[in-house]
Length: 326
Image 1 (cartoon, rainbow, N blue to C red):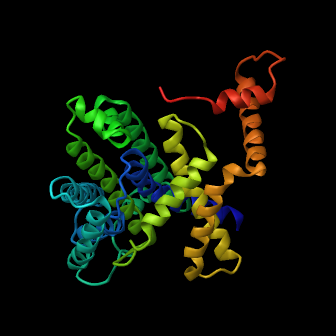
Image 2: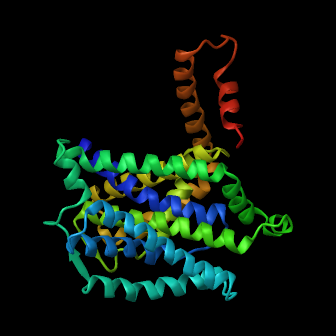
């Protein structure tokens, strides 16, 4: 039973982890309150499901969701940068329009995929046990996407996107088109969100028009929890923390459901989790857990290379925690 809960939490957490990475790009990197997520998530699921039912290869159908998700982000970016609509309102307008578009694409409020070929079924046919199929597929996809995002944010273009979120006036004075950087960042974030929706639809076996409601809260919860668990200024550790936060959130939800909470209570559980994650740095218990976690890391590091005996675990913990982004 415990193994089933852990595997299920890992699968779902990884699938939603892509959406959490998209939320991280908008809220943390771009400093843009993008609510398009609630519309682009079901958009990816709706497009992929409709194409699969129409006979398209599941891989191509899933990739197609990337482009339409990026298009939704571009629309939000244009509304904000060209039409001078505030970021929050631009996201709401796009999200509202996408709800009708999703219903038009689906043709009805719900599309079943139980008897349709999906990426997961294709991998199962290769000989991988059905119990681990989703875990293997989602882990590979998320790791590849994470590596690509980490690399992109360290490129010259990625640095420009990060600088646009940090100080748009400064980067604009250097000749960078900040409007283009905002549009690019929103396109990338919503492409990841749509891909997440496509994977979740294939995992759960159906697409629902209302599956995007509250996605932005779940994404923010994953980002905040991840930042509380893995504290670092390095991009690679930050994106890892976001994914870990998504998995941890799903694990807590699974435990809460088994404790007797209903699905209608999950919004309350999410709110409590975010409050704890935001307040955690001020608690002594959090510092204690962090020191123990650092001690475990030091133990494994010492097993690979020799460390002077007079170096204390506390000093090593401080060294690890003080790492900066290169």
